[in-house]
Image (cartoon, rainbow, N blue to C red; front, side, top):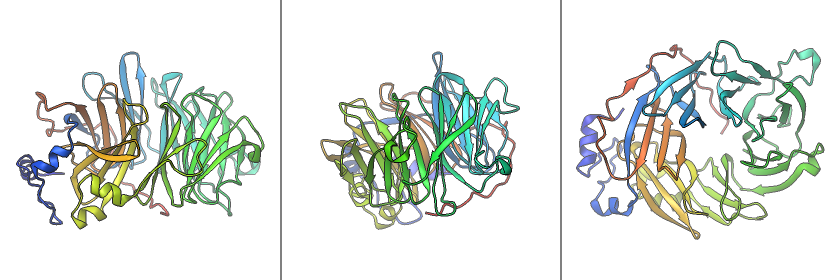
Length: 404
């Protein structure tokens, strides 16, 4: 956690990291001219758990936040007037790969774990999952396979669940279930040659799906087609390893990609090449990480749509200086400094942005959820005094290393 001395140094314009960072000058800060302030933050657990996954939904007028932890647990928070834990789910025995609210019911939450199980929970009673989705292609296996899940998603209509797997016996699978019966419908296994790290359904078209893989491909499918060759609509070659993909609605639908080498690519759906591409070196310069130690530790946390059509906010940080959480904005093919988030205390692993409300939520390796509000600092009551939720049972788990 950042010490009070470091916080004081930051406010005076000098951040002295353990790796000899350069001072932050007023001229540098002036480049990031869209202010955000830390409105609230909360430590989720008492032990050193990472927050790895995040999803949000609306429950009436209330915003609800679901979090997946490195301790294999998931919890749900209300973001109404203050962060408040409203539900915790039983711990899994293997790492969570993601979680998703049902679009049609904010009380239903899907969680997926690497051992090859996706569960549906009713948050009004969390003692037992109401449905489970398993690989039942081999009746003798009792729904237990060696296929390891890396990702999953639920389509906008709530009718289908899709999971992406790690490579097993030379194949990486996309597996589909009918949510009404929890029955396995089938799968695709020819279009990816390596672990499928991302599965993302279209935000409004229930039969359209994109996937990303460490083989460097982003594939787009029409899942109404049972034959995989006919279902494959487009294949984008990123020439890298895909970490994150996301749909973006604007004047034209687009897809953003963050690679494992911290490059950002933007694709239109009919593109043969990205219409915008920014390397790690591009972002190092724009977000002012000119010190070599900082530049080598830059990561891209996420890409978010903004209130302006076809403009995106790229959220970046440094693995060696958690205080250097900054963002850049893409517009008309250019990348420009955007915001600096003073008071950040962790490496950010997941985030959510509401451009209309000017609200950014970040979470990560400090086990902290931070709420950032657009605008200059207001009368915030000691945001560095963390409230700690102890409802979660503290367990020790080793985080499984990724193959990339």
